[in-house]
Amino acid sequence: MRGWPPLTIGLLAVVIGAVWTVQGLGYVSGSVMTDERAWAVVGPIVALAGLVLLWFGLRARRRP
Image (tube, rainbow, N blue to C red):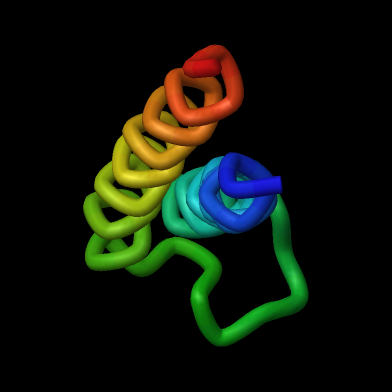
């Protein structure tokens, strides 16, 4: 069970980062984040951090 928290948080961060990226680029409308360059920069950073957490979570689950 030691690998589940990083996997869960990492997956959530990847999804949120992707949504923030497409909102920042203007592909999703209806938000104050639409067409804001800051979110187009922050989104990929959050998604990358999520991928790192996923990697650590997978490594923790493989160890005996």
